[in-house]
Image 1 (cartoon, rainbow, N blue to C red):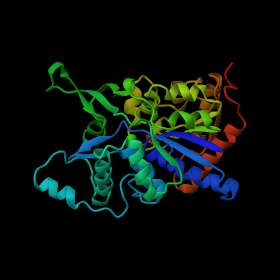
Image 2 (image 1 turned 90 degrees about the horizontal axis):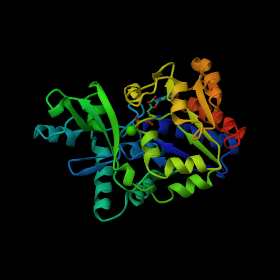
Image 3 (image 1 turned 45 degrees about the horizontal axis):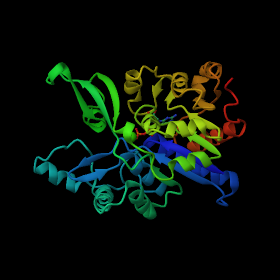
Length: 333
Ligand code: GDP
Ligand code: CA
């Protein structure tokens, strides 16, 4: 079975780790499954000359056993000597947590990119160490960068566009946001292998990632959303919203900007019944099931809190079970 999943960072990585466990449980580990992950690269940023790809790294470290488990991003047993030394120079920015072990990834990535390799090849090279058990494809080798237009009294016109990381990490999503723009997306092309993987998929899973700045940016690369809509495989998504709130993070701030309520059913409607055949909501959102089914998307309520790998695996089993009972666009009339 070939499974394809667009992915952001923490939410996707934890779900994918559960998926790999679930697949092993289903087939006894005889390796007949192939998982291809289409990673979001619109969060990427250059800091101190180093190219940092937070979502690709979160997936790579989580599936490869190198993640800082409690934090959900960055390396386990991390130290911050380089960050402290840069701060001693007064060098900016100081708000991004660049750990020493993590830095090695960024140094090597930057060196390979500067040698002329595309990000897809560089990601493959980095994954040779981590062996994540999936094929991790950047959504594009072209630069796409999420910017958020925020209130800023000091800026001309009272507004300013900032890089997503500045809005999210430095400003904690506190300033009022007016729009989210994936800069460069319209002229980007899908990375090597992305469209073929979607076309050849037996199942497409949309993990509980941020619908706007993770899944939304992957889908904004021309051709990717269209390929998923055109795919023969059933598409099943998992709600990142539980009980009217993001389980962790501040996804509600960005949903508001795109006019979507912070509700499991509203996120399904935002993705739409062209894209989704099935949708999982949390048990506590069972009331959303008829609302989602009314728009032509098959829906089930199951526990959706990824408290550990077993819980994430149970979610993946539920997504695969729902997909198995669906044929493409069965539910759309
Ligand atoms: P990021 O790029 O690191 O922000 O990660 P993602 O975009 O992949 O995922 C972030 C989203 O994961 C958040 O908006 C949360 O709503 C969702 N999330 C995190 N933990 C859980 C969980 O345990 N269950 C569910 N259903 N969603 C989760
Ligand atoms: Ca991210």
